[in-house]
Amino acid sequence: MKVYIDGKYFSEKDAKISVFDHGLLYGDGVFEGIRAYNGRVFKLKEHIERLYYSAKAILLTIPMKHEEITEAVLETCRQNRLQDAYIRLIVTRGIGTLGLNPKTCKRPSVIVIVGKIQLYPPEYYERGLEIITVPTVRNLHSALNPAVKSLNYLNNILAKIEANNGGCEEAIMLNSQGFVSECTGDNIFISRGSHLATPPLTAGALYGITRGVVIDLAKETGMSVAEENLTRYDLFNADECFLTGTGAEVIPVVKIDGRAIGTGKPGPMTRNLVKKYHSLTASSGEPIYGAKTPNVRRKSR
Ligand code: PXG
Image 1: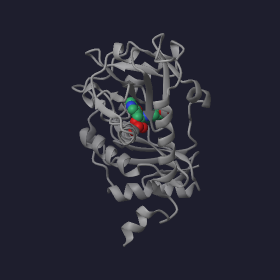
Image 2: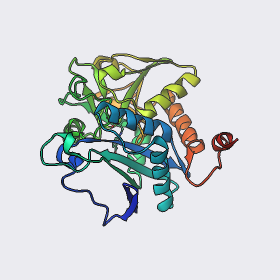
Image 3: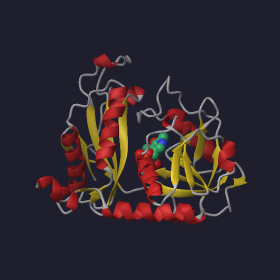
Image 4: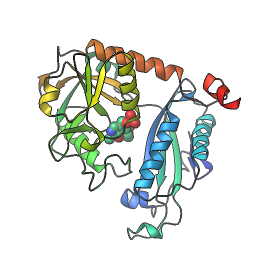
């Protein structure tokens, strides 16, 4: 695999960043996890916009225009002849001194790594996930706002370790008020009848791209959708529960903290959204290899 670093391509062996980069020294930087399906990058514009919003929040000036970053992502896919991929786009604060002041960092580095996707095993989609609430509380927005997709993921990593210690793949994180925020790398939804609910961003959720897509898809099916503060009690008594994320897509949850959710099996509403999400990823996105979609033809007129 070839890796993009600041305008050049390197082999995996030679793709290296300085030990003085504040991305390493302090987790000072931002990133995106993006996917390509069938030769098209799904929701690329949305991911790049979120990258710039994250960067703005931490006063990091990305040294490239939106279009240049878009092209770097597409060209890295081309260089690696990929049709389906997981794309990690990273902007680090850059090389500085050992002190934490970012003023010493001359220029942020832009990195694009592409790879094969690590999915949950297919049986989890069939049977559903069993997850638990963990003790590590989601970062306060007054400290490090969870809306910033920063390189500092220790909050989520600690929760993930606690989930693994409890024999689970994912963890539900609560905020300091005890409301549900999200999972370590996924947003969470519950349904009751034809109503779908997910925590608001103010509860400590990331503005998930998949979350946004699923909200739109659910509305199309005639469901009412609301961003609501949710408690564990609300989760336990939901008809259905599922998680959303670029990696996981839409995955059913069938047990939370030992309580079966609904029938204890993936429900019809979740299955329907999984199907609709798959058909959207298969039929839309930014073409990697040229103007083959109606979307691009429209632009060139
Ligand atoms: N919440 C958090 C904390 C995330 O990191 C999501 C929600 C879902 O957002 P999107 O935009 O992807 O729908 C994420 C993103 C991984 C991995 O390797 C997953 C994410 C981030 C980093 C790594 O599984 N999910």
